[in-house]
View (spheres, rainbow over the protein chains, first blue to last red):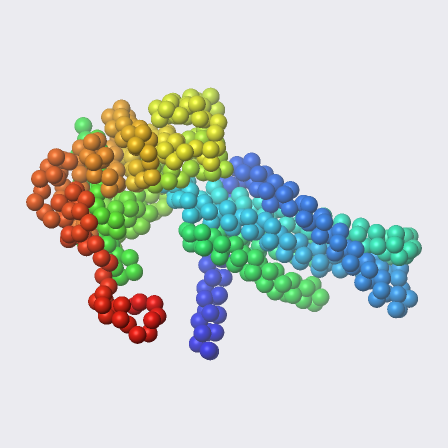
Length: 254
Length: 273
């Protein structure tokens, strides 16, 4: 039992090391990828624009739930006016980056992993190698960069729509005073809170994109292999995002 | 004119996967300007040979020289430089599915050159015309039949004007007409472009009609070498079995297994060992 645990821990550490090496390979190729901006724009469209609907819808619902729960809780202390602050801080610092990252892993991450995995399974990556084209430069780096650029933007949109959703419930339905909803939010959410959200979404963007392209690139060239890589992408991303979230939160509270 | 008559020299190569030897003292020379076929039963490592020649995997021992350059110890950049002189046709074509036929053929040009668009267009259309698919330039790979995919992949493989063209099982799953087209193209492109072609296949009759030289691999070694006609008269049992398409012989019909009756009467009823 203990040896099994130790060996699986060893494997995990090995995989993290492998991923870091892969990240270095990608970063080395990034400058050359930047000379072909169209490839990156395509990926921003694929990972970003195509994820917009799910991000906006989820943001709206999360914001509305936050509005309801927040209102219920704050009413007990007679401070319903603080709903704007509570919703904004919760969304900007935590829910925005974290939920966006989880949705990103499910929507864009799986698409990236299965696309690259299928390219491996159908010899497209080997064909590129044979044409003296490095697949990491041509396929992986633009997709990685596209994800890294997209994630913070999606998180910002999520938070924005979420705040609107909280406002919708709090102000329109529960009749919290609109003036205090917005002014309290303006007064108590400072740049540090926004920065925390930006840092988180940036880090999650790197993590989720890296995991997706790594799993896809290293998948077994079979149908099962691609399926397993897609599953691993979601599972690993979720765990890593929640772990990193704790670390960054602790860092900002220091 | 040629400093080295053999464009590819494989000398005493050993290679094993997971402790199982695939090649053990393999020697082959591929003559410049010829169509050379590599044949052999499934599992003899024909595709592995191609991976060795193209530097996708490294040999455990021995040496491989391509166009006068020894493969072992090459950096990735040097290997990529060498690969620009090679074209390879994968079994299924391996077209990039997100690009159109035209863009697939233009792909190597766009990656390696800074040619003006007009010239790229001309070069791509010339190559597509050579494989008879100029009219399909606007299609996506998903809209092509198996034979057409391979012809597009062939156009892509020759667009950089390579010296060596490698075909990995180019006839698998093709109807007789498509097979005839690919056969004609192999010969025609080889002679018209002054290439050296290597064709891995086990379609004895088809390949014999275009190949100048044939290597027959079995058990990790070359068991016969010569023109297709010479191969017919080689007395070796392995060659007779392969060329004649016999079910049993030196290459056994049965995969190694424990005794048949013992296996049937085994009590545990579990999966056979």
